[in-house]
Length: 253
Ligand SMILES: Nc1ncnc2c1ncn2[C@@H]1O[C@H](COP(=O)(O)OP(=O)(O)OP(=O)(O)O)[C@@H](O)[C@H]1O
Ligand SMILES: [Mg+2]
Image (cartoon, rainbow, N blue to C red; front, side, top):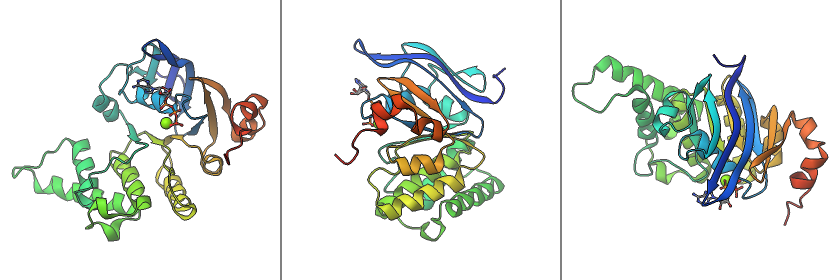
């Protein structure tokens, strides 16, 4: 059984690449419905940490449990099926498919339905309804026929988040969703993330502090592969260790 209310439970995690310890005794929990931001300097190990949770990398040591079940070492698609969905720092859409086809493929893969003449019409009606629901949620329903590759950058990121949402995950993981966006695009995507992830756990890596403080109820600071501090935004922003290691950096340079 999972500890009460804890969805993701990470204890004493390590990962080294050829002897270099990139994740170093990292312990962190995410509760059901929690909105948890991961911040930290470049190279601190944030994306590696995501890769360990989603099964792309196997930890050198330590445990990762989701809903009380160990997931370290499991294949990425199995971890995804358990309810963890992730979008990447680099966009991960199919540019040659339409917006609608991108979402529909994600829904089909969740349901395990392959394209086939034998598929049941009623099952496809469900898939089409769910596809439309997701398109509306991410505000791309009127652009459903466009090729994904022809969308502007902000819309491509929205589509990518839609692909993650299509599998109806319990926890959604976003790696720098606002990277490279204009102020307007950032505002739109933050409001979309806020709206679409309600009720789900959100684990988000983000450098933009305005985004972090507007979305997160918990912030963990990762520094040299370990959690330097973790807590509510007001506590973290006043933590002297955090100020020294990260927030106090001159971000304009
Ligand atoms: N597959 C790999 N092989 C070797 N070293 C790696 C590998 N993946 C990551 N690293 C190293 O691990 C360290 C942490 O990288 P990581 O991408 O996790 O940092 P990050 O906190 O996400 O940084 P950023 O904010 O720039 O995205 C870096 O020094 C990186 O070069
Ligand atoms: Mg990264």
